[in-house]
Image (cartoon, rainbow, N blue to C red; front, side, top):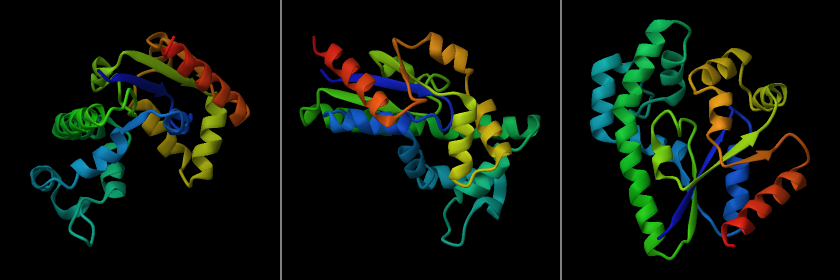
Length: 200
């Protein structure tokens, strides 16, 4: 039976970087963000979104424009929170279905360990799929610097952070903490140490 490791952390904290390190050691990757992109193209999701928000969130290609949608659901105020909660009710069950299907395919192919990289892992209840939880720790100022270097605005960073569970609760629910505030080699060493411990 395949073991699934959940990865927690703050926005721009290095969760995907750590997931890639696990992948180089032989783990499969269950990428909820990528699956979420696929879900936004499902006909039933597009139709529900069109009924809710009209054409304003659709791009020239006729599909949902994720940037336009993000501006709507991550805007300040309670109205945006309601819209974000609707989006999550619409997409999270579909994302979970696809994640389970991918996990089954990996297990059938002989993959022994997979890592689940999901921004809302605990909030969506997907931590129930996981045997172990890893928290990727990184100070806010460093995470903000990384986000700004990717072209984000600080208000976008804060909005995404506010939409997630608190870092204290994420850290408290983890089985192991990986410090990703320093050199990449130090992060790699911690990942390898945890990986070795899994197979003892």
